[in-house]
Length: 302
Image (cartoon, rainbow, N blue to C red; front, side, top):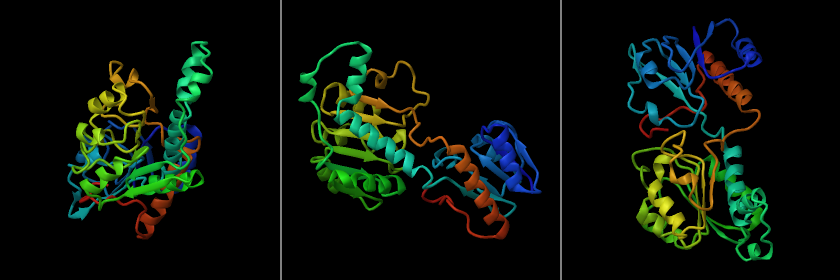
């Protein structure tokens, strides 16, 4: 059975993957290159997937599935299996969230700018600093990222409120009114688009920090920028945006107290090696007929 790989790998990474695959042929291609392989590893363009009449299994190199949601997933009467990297990025994204929260609270982001300007402010900075210890943190999303973040928050003695798929508008809004920090990590679905709009953002406690490490579609970006500029919010940690790369004219580049991590939150120095490991583990399962890790539920969209 033939395998197409459309992720960027160096020579040694390619060799390791080919060795792990064994006797099945492997080709390396671009995400936009036509492909008719039975197994695909990577995130090919949706039109490439749609045109692949031989596809039996697609292993994504991401958690997000939104760009593929409208495709037809049957080939010759068989359903195509699609797997994502659910759970794969829990540690790095949780650490990114915590780093951003601490950086804003302890004034690190501001102090870095002052250093670059060679401006000594000193004592006046102290009164603007906030403690994470004992604060109220709302985690919107009950997946692996927020589960890991909740563990990291334990030494800070935070009061943590977590919302999963059973959330209601009233209960969420009540929690936002007392939250010092809000962290959203939910996927892109029809239900989450624009969920944090101007009205909901206005319900956040004044001075709260808002963190989006889920999908850019979750937030009304103009409303978020306004809340930051008007100082209703104390800051934001933004890993994901509607448009990526973010246009140079976007207000997030200049809005105050923004830590913009450029969708790097899931990164680590061993990321590619771990992705190869996940693919090879699932390939072994595919060959043996064992259920694959990270199967996408087409109904839910993730």
